[in-house]
Structures are given as C-alpha cells and as structure tokens.
Image 1 (cartoon, rainbow over the protein chains, first blue to last red):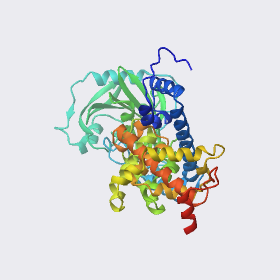
Image 2: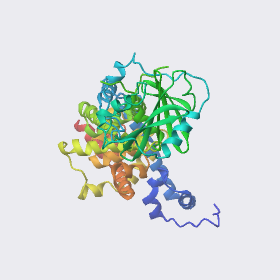
Image 3: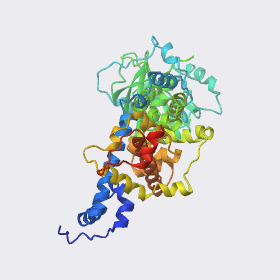
Length: 273
Length: 210
C-alpha cells in the first residue's frame, strides 16, 4: 500500500506492541493514529496481533458488562441501598453552603407551611425600588446608630422609636453576619429604615419601608427562595432582593453574587423558632 | 405560589438526582472492590454522603462521574483497604509470567476460532471470580477502564497516579485477567480441539482431575 508521503512510518514493531493497548483504548492522538496505521499497513505480524488483541479486549469488555454492567444483578444497586442513600441525604444536616451559612433547622420548612410570609403579588413592572435602594446603599451616608452604640438586641426598639410602622429586621442566622449600624432613610418619599450588615466578605444593606398600597415590589424577576417568593433585580452593579411581609417591603442590597444573596435571604425568611 | 422547598433541599435534590444516576455503577464497582454486598453498600453510602458534604467544592459542569468515583475509591482506600488483607502488587516471577508471551499465546489460541471467541462461553460467575482474583491495584484500573469506561487521564485523576502508572497497571491487570479467563475456559472444557485432534495438555489434565 503506498504510504502518504507526509506520514512518516516512525513507529516500529516494538513501539507498536508497547502501545497497542493505548491505540485500542482510543488514547492516541491523530498523528499517533496515523503513524500506527502506517505501520500496520506494512506489517502483517503487528496487524495480526493488534487484531487478536482487539478481539480479546472486545470480548472481555463484553463479558464484564454482562456480569457487572447495567441490567446484571451485580451491576444494579439494591433498592435498599437507593432508599438508604436518599434517607441519609435527608438526614444530612450540613448543606453545601455550610461555610457561608449556619445550618437551618430541617423541620423549619414544614413548620412554616401556613406561615405569614409573603407574596409580592403585583404585575406592575416597576424597578424604581431596586434603583432607589441601590443608590441609597452606595452613598455610604453616616449611620444614625452603630453597633458600638446600640446592642443588637436593642435594634428593634431603636427602630420602633423612630418609625411608626412595625419594621423588624429579619434574623440572618449564619456565622459572620453582623449588624454594623443603621439610619433612617428615604425611599421615594417614604420613610425607610436602613440597616447595614457586615459579612465575612463585604457588606450589605437592608431597607424596610411600609407600603400598604403595594407601590413597590413589581420589578426584577420572580424567584422562589425557600418558602417565599421574592423578586431579584440588578441595579447599579448591586443585586437587590425584594420581598414583602404584610405591609412591609424589605429590600436587601449587596454586591454578593446572586446565589450567596439568595442563601442569606433564605435564612432570613426561614420561620423563627 | 408557595415553594415549600428550602434552598438546601433544592441542592440536595440536584445532588441526589446526579448521584442516584451513578448508583448502579458505583455499586457494581464497590462490589468488586470489597467483594461482599454489605461492605459494598456501606462503601457506596459513605462515598455518596462524603460527596454531598463536598458538593460545594464540585465545579458545576465538570465531570461529576469521575469526581464521584474519586471519592468512592478514596473512601475505599482509606477505610476498607486496611482491613482487606491482600498483596497490592504482583512482583517477581508472577510479573514476568503476565507479559507479552502470554498475549501472543492467548491471541493465537482464539485466532483459531474466528467465528466465536472462546471466552464468549464463560459464564458471569467465572468472570466475577477472575476479576475478584486480581490484586486490588490492578482490579481498580481494570474496573475503571473496562467496566466504567474512564480514560487514562480520568483514571489518573481518580487514583492520583501518573498516566504512565495507569497504563502499566492496566496492561498487567488485563493480562492477569485474561490469563484467569483463559484458564477458566480451559477448565470448563471450552477450549476447542486443535486441528490435529489434540487439545491443550494443561487444560486436559485439569479437566481430568476435576
């Protein structure tokens, strides 16, 4: 057989024998395959032994599949194992985002089935709120109180003394989230409470504003976070998650990525024990 | 309107779907590593739970299957292998016995019967025995390559060994496996008679003494 002049038959019998398995296993690159083919085209002995090797390889693989592959009893996980794995995963208390968040009680979701949370049920395409909170958050205005001046457990009272609606910051139950301070703010001519949090990496802001006539909360896209439906928007480079609880609209704004923010919101929305 | 599943449940669901899809393959491999059903089930369950705990380290969109097998084999090596008494590597004379000569002998034997490979007649039980008889390091690479279809590179990653080591273990593991399979075939009388009417003498003697 005439050889392609560009293909140098660089492979000799010893090399081919050494690497025949790699060839059959499909591990050769294009050039190596060409070299092997060139050698096999001219070498009857190697061709025979590679063919024999291929046949044996093929039959052994087939026998392995018959004995141990899908469909064989030895290749099928027992139903008890499947069920055991599912049960063990359900029992597992450490979710994969454990580094960011403390584990949440497993029973919480069930307990909350009839919970008071929150539907943002408006069809208006209104993204004024995310823009406004992102703008306000990014201005880094001085805080009216700081963690040094007001203990965390006194924050609710601090808020109650200053606004006439019942705004309670949600409890972020994960390690490394700490209230830095807060101030009274203003969102589209409405009084809002702003709380600034320190996170393991960065900060975030929470706005609470009373909105009985459902003016806010139509922007962004809907997302299900735990038991809640929230809306997620991007504004000025921040991710903003908006949700409603009764007449209060909460907006969480942060430069965290969406997924991390989602986890934070999830923990905040999980029912309190 | 209300989605009662929490985020962690969704992650669990995603993981569980991926893992359950590999459970048969994991179990089949674990069975051949531990060689008994109870240990295999424990091994798979341990490995899957470990994988779940490390699921945040898993890069989405990469090779989940290889990642899962890496955890399975690591779990096996760490936890079970110490209790399994076996020589890990074939050394010395045994090693010589499984090199090229055997390949050519085996090859010529079945080349005589192009219609049907004589190993085709083996029953699953014999195949399982032959696999289980392999020293563990060879058994691992043979299972990963020839049953689970991983590439050399994937096996190297799974076992944390160089590709060259994968290749040499695979070569020797396959030769040992073939050797057992051919000898089972001979014992069971599957060896075809030679053209001159004689049969393989060794196989003949083994059959006589059975």
